[in-house]
Length: 518
Image (cartoon, rainbow, N blue to C red; front, side):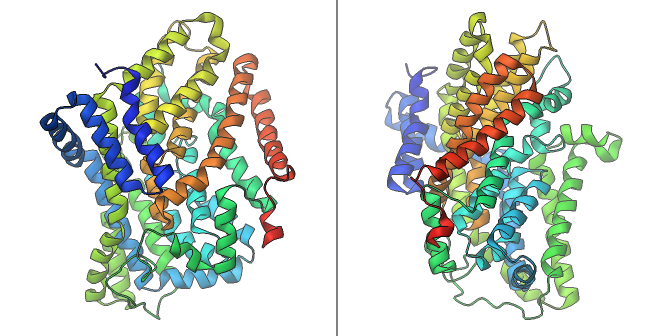
């Protein structure tokens, strides 16, 4: 009765609406899960309990990919705790403040690091957050703004990077053509990702924020780090959330190298771990190894090795004792418990929508529009909007373009070199990233909150107006692309339109320049 109908989208819609209204994410997600179980079981009590906990939560926590991500998350939390205890984060903060003199410089450094770490979005979120937090705190940049910069350089950057776990996923969904070639050709048409980067830079250089983000920035500038701690879902007694130790010991011997070396080691080891799972050391080429990699397992391999190397390095340089290193590991685990709980609920909610056939329902809508040749020029814009809605409702971008890309490819099966097909494929990816970027139940959004140590719902509410602005300009860009079908014309126009939109918002008088108020 409720399967493969609009009702299949009701659970995530309820969960997201409640989260935005109540500002409380745990109960909102659980209510959404419960609604999904009731619809699937036909309002049977025992059927609902079975579907929610056995088919849903237990099944998701038994999935090898999900378990790998949770292990990676725990290890990253432990490494962040180790870097803090070793004094590496504090030393980097002092060094950065002496070299990065302005708030704009701190934001640009965060954006640059986010773009450089393009291998994987999960890795990006947690690494950029741990490295840049001391610098952004010193310049009184709110944790909400840090979370936005992290999130906006995670999925949007990965989706335009040919060598990334995202590129590997996209190429796997394309049958009958060279997936990597199509991915590369689609990059200039990935308007949402490119415009998000342009928007970040424009906001930084103009020293301008609007909506809830402006209020968060004003609060952080007026009250310093305490404002961020007030909005953090982590414990206030420790910068990393270790609530049972009011004053955790921090080594006075720490230097910048005690943060930089573990981070570099982590990056290198994770890259090696990913290409190892793709068969690189068995003769597979580098690009093919990335395409065939298991990112979840590769990140676990890399992070475990990096953790061991970090502990050995700290012991060798005597910044921490063996007992101090071992005590930091469970504290790092504790700091990631809120993110793990939200991820578990988000994955369970996704399983509810999957069982109700939400993907099939949306795929049918797209296929019907694609069959109407009179609307073919508007297909990219339509696909973008559908992809954004589906990813927003389900919290998954990979699942979204996994549904939509095969449909688009089938529409153009007789002409695989059709430029409109490339634009539509890019619209699939851009829409998926847009919805993922906006959704409170997206794993990357949750990771960005964890990386910035920002209260999750605050991150969502402050980021949403920015993401919607970029999405609105992207829709216009895809309408233009469907008519012109030349990225050399469409991309410059769309970037100019994005910058013009920011100027209009600034000059409209609805939002005052944050610099003027500060």
